[in-house]
Length: 291
Image (cartoon, rainbow, N blue to C red; front, side, top):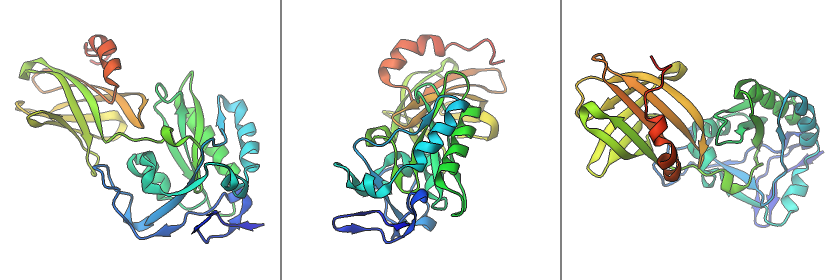
């Protein structure tokens, strides 16, 4: 059976098998109009179906993956498209897909693609994308993604499909992505101790700002390593990142770093202001296992 996602006045003319859930429709690249990194130009502008009440495809444990596979196999994009509130939108209108590293990775993949995220998102800092050839059913791609997510998510975490093919499978308000987020720093040796704004740049660097301008830069390496350059410091600080979970689509992190002189910095990025006020006193203290 062939089909295409369509709406009155909108037609993405790509027919594929029902199980594949629809290939992405493309058009000219356009800026999202924000500071977040743009979707790679090679994939152009894509269209996504969004739903007021999308089907829930998730797994709390490995035993749930087969149930999720069956649910995914039963999804009918034509039926979903007829539901009240169904819309076709530019992918740039879904901030988490167009702004986050994991979302952009998903958009750059072939049509048989799935992106999943840990649940609850606030305490399960895992998201990943999986794609396959057109010959592999989308339900199998989703099962692979959920299995990989569960393996990495850790205890007390499940995983949910965020998007498959060209369909968003979470409510739109769960696909937000904040461009400027709160940060809390404690670097007593150089007189930095207070709240900042953290802003991601297209190259993956995080800028730290106060009212006077940029006060620092955070550059991430492989395996959770981080280098922190701060205004007023003669040397960079090197340390590690501890991922906590997602807030407004952004990964909340705890960073602990020190320079060659042994001066230490604690930095919390991505937490809500109320949460920072509640936990900052504990998390800004240098942890006993940080070296």
